Length: 286
Image (cartoon, rainbow, N blue to C red; front, side):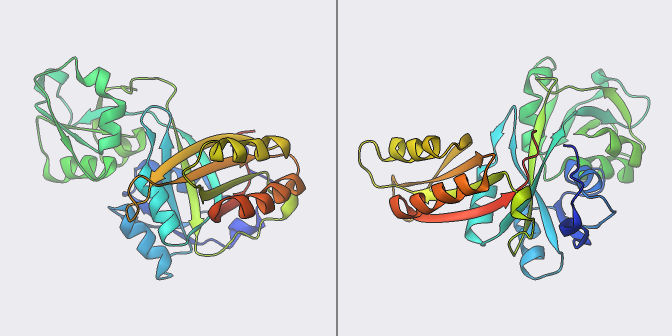
């Protein structure tokens, strides 16, 4: 993402909540997205991240939302929606997973690998080559690296970032072990209030709506987007727990003209149920 020259809005953000600790990919995003350094609040769960923003402990939060290998992180869509959070920005980070352990160990010495479930999923092809290794899901990639170093745990490896290996003095046994070498994760920057980005800077939006169970209802909405010259870049369905077999749709839209988007938005408010704007922000993929 090439940082926009007009980022005055983001100067107001002094602290952010992240899932994970220093050395995690969320931490890396906090370093790269903002023009000025921000303090971070380390949380081991996304629920904790959201709580820190809701109780105004932090100005904003960084939340991973989808990965190019593993797909959408659906629970995070629900967290953003259910707690009325607003997406004020996005960032795409190249994710390189490295297998790391204490020095002077090889892959044959490793009996267990701990990491976040998404990291394990993204590296499953590599890990299948070593059936002697037990895979164990954990809360955070960097926290595992920190634990190995703190307790000097041998025969155990972490899958984490190069920054984590550097921070916790671990040796990288194998580099870039993710299944697909070009591996990106998309992150949202969220706040409790709408962005103050000028309309002229906004060219992407995330919206949510529901539709009746009748033929062509989704196709009709998609035609509206096309007629208004909007580009649908993502559509994700999420089941409504309280109403079996009914779904909410989360949609990302890009556009050149805000007026075209505004027109489509007014039509969707009429045609769809429970229409909601989750965020209007700058497209990071230009």
